[in-house]
Amino acid sequence: MASGLRWGVLGTADIARSQVVPAIQASTNGRVVAVAGRDPRRTADFAASFGIANTFRGYAELIASPDVDAVYIPLPNGLHVEWSLAAADAGKPVLCEKPLALTAKDARRVVDRFAAKGIPLMEGFMYRFHPQNARALELVAGGAIGTVREVRAHLSVDIMQAAASGNVRFDKALGGGSLLDMGCYAVNVVRRIFGEEPVAVMGDLDLDRTSGVDLAASALLLFSDGRSASVSSSFKANGQGTYQIIGTKGTIEVPRAFIPGMGSRAAEGLVIVVDADGHRVETRFEPVDQYRLMVEAFAGAVLSGRPVPYPARDGVDNLRVLDAIAVSAASGMRMEIKT
Image (spheres, rainbow, N blue to C red):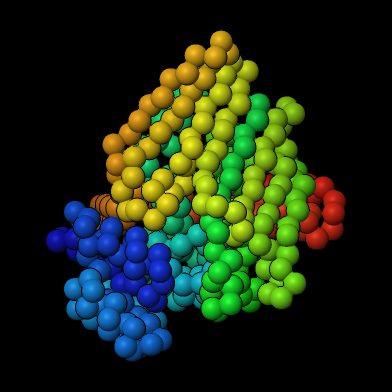
């Protein structure tokens, strides 16, 4: 691996085609050398588009290939566990799209397997690598807005037109629904800002009568000392991804928090701070490819033997909250979260 990390990609998902594979091919320390897919023609076209030398019909064959050092998994959510475990058993590091699994219990099983074998595993939350989000956390830690009392986070993309075309986001068996697909971002950033886990949640899901998946989700997360967060996600609203941090001495807003360019690979960032007197300061960040920053950080950790930047066990904790939101929505009751 001296010349860089040799990546294998399971599937030809849109996120792989539009974002992650271009990021890997542009990275300084890695290259996609293999792709596997169920449709030979689609897989061959995908490989040709990115100059990928090797194609495989089966995921297991790619994982077993001695030419592949690490595996990127952009498969539907419901397939993450099976193929992450297969990669772990083959000794291959994995960058897995979020969420790691459909439940915290299954995610824990995956994380424990990788930990027992000493193999790197990281969840693909690319927004964590954009400098605007690092800056927001620095401001919170530095007391720029006093003590954080409330956070509001939201992510939505209008994809309802894809419901009739077999899009996996509308397939309940494969882990579809806005909560797992987009709400996971809102929950993740809230947990990062507070630096602790919520003690209870109250959730609500807008369920589609045909598919059974949630088309929109919302929840109130309760933290210690009376602090709270509201999170929401939607397949039915215009593309937005934002969070606002409300403190005792002001607010911080990141208006393009998760997907700054809403489709563009490189987009500028913006952090807005308003103090208690109403003074507003905007900090803009040069356009960066947060996907490239993510894959370079992962590859750098694998190549050097260092821990990955964000421990995979965080994915278990994130799913514990998502599980509780789903249970609360189904029962209509507040759900306590036991850590």
